[in-house]
Image (tube, rainbow, N blue to C red; front, side):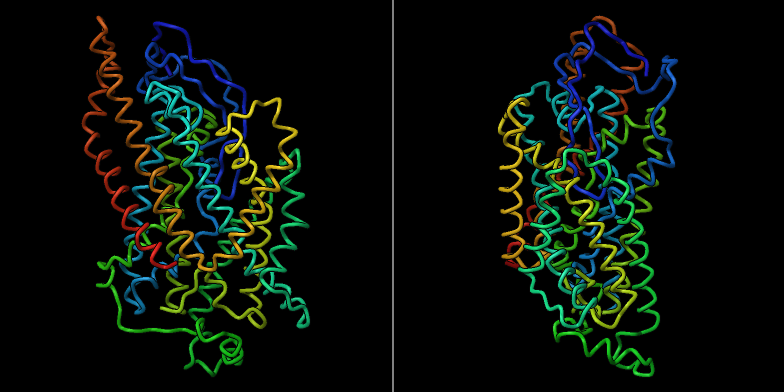
Length: 489
């Protein structure tokens, strides 16, 4: 990008792990942004730099962003549909909501990347600082991103507490393991050692299991739905009755009369809040802009549009097939509706999801742990001696909550309704509006205004109503979604 300077460039601190909340993790820079008043970067003109690009290509970034977005939260969406409906027609407004919330999320993701292009911020907190002009309030987005990751890890532990006992029973009929035994054993023997590793790069390739597992799970759910394997009327299938015999009463398919029109009830806000969790990847938006091979808004927007479009499809299909199979009985973890002892293709899905969660867990945990240390303002030199204690403490809290809280749907909805809506909808719009206001004030003091500046400001002025609408809807969804999520408790 062409840079118009009247002062010094923005200093950039050393790299540190970002607060990650999805299947992939990486490192991002933290920008101090102490001189944003004196720098203007034009995203309109082409860069003059002749350096050789070293980042990732657009197709590679599209795949990475889809992998970052689509996680285990997708497996709770059928229960979100069941929150307001139990008739097959309920999937129609549910798919509309998936597309709508996905589009809102994509817009917020786009705003963050564009703000990074305008201000040269390298991280979410850096974008906030560049927009507000002060580092004093940087703890607000840091806290929000940290809590998003904390909630994600809690949902991971809750899912593991369900899948581990089922998998042990599938491996051997005599291996009866309770939720408590399964999660405590997994945490102490696997998760704790992984979270204490100094180098997590060896785990990064296993995050590919996540997206592969979701594609496989979607296909398996589609096959079981088409077969009618979980319908009482399909006893002609030799395996159907054994599948249903395995299920407890609360997991048996149940269909009623609450269809598409019931989306207008407040119960639909549970699904909306869960979608705010499902599409959450916004803390990594700066990384996806700056790690492009040739960072430009055109390439970035292509990545955003294609990735979120693909993610909508990967969320809509399992949500649809899961709900159409079990209706109002869809569990918070839809895999728990399927037979754990006889349905081999769905058990393989559980294996893939479990392996993905175990490998992704430490990648997300390190980001959350660093966020806690950042909030406590622990100097870097003192962190090494605190890492073990903080790790054990955080894992203890997460594991205890995972054993005490049983409704995954509530956790996903509450996370999305509170910190999710803030990070995805409210903060991006607020930051861009603040950046626009500060740039306008700077232009008023400037004797000479560049044409690129005028063009950018005019474009942002026209877009302001959309930013305000995105933020207001985020607040409304968050308030009502929080109220409904707390009613589940």
